[in-house]
Image (cartoon, rainbow, N blue to C red; front, top):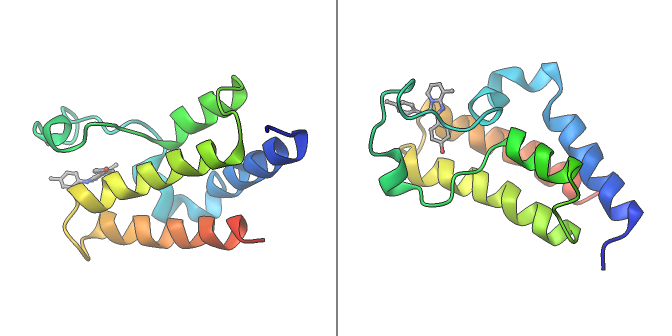
Length: 109
Ligand SMILES: Cc1ccc(Nc2c(-c3ccc(O)cc3)nc3c(C)cccn23)cc1
């Protein structure tokens, strides 16, 4: 059951992830992966369900999450896409691990 409190909790987490102080680890997640701009034409062959912070924010703003579990699922999808595509310990993979740690800290509060 979706509650106002759940919604506000999710909003607060997105507010944290968008903070300028996290820019150096959040930048790969701000917008949809652009395979042309990034010169990774095989991205959509590997990643079947793209997800990013802008889309998560849009879904939140348009009441498209029925509960916080659906919100968390998109957050985890975004990070797992990153770990699937980017080699372990590569710069963007490490950004994902660091930003997911920020998320986990807030999510568990
Ligand atoms: C050749 C190459 C290798 C790795 C990347 N990764 C990457 C990604 C990315 C984010 C999420 C994701 O699920 C997949 C990729 N975002 C970027 C950005 C914004 C700048 C530079 C690299 N970036 C790009 C090109």
